[in-house]
Length: 65
Image (cartoon, rainbow, N blue to C red; front, side, top):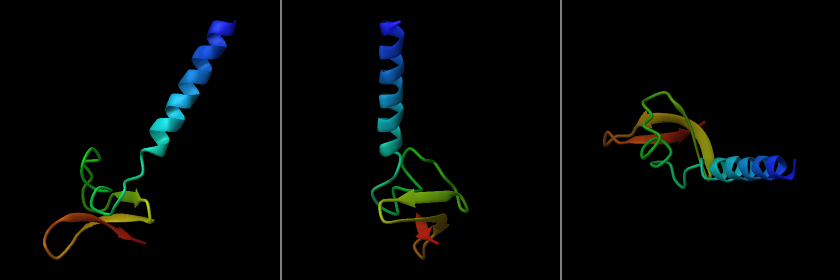
């Protein structure tokens, strides 16, 4: 029983740590990097959340709502 509880606690802790790292540091990383988003996808970064859009230079960035 104790072994099963320990595994559950570790699984919850790991899920929490992954969730904390899911928000990008800046608007560019929110739509690029490991996310592989496209225009119109919802995105979030440390300062805001919004949708991925192309800027004037053609770079995919997260535009705040």
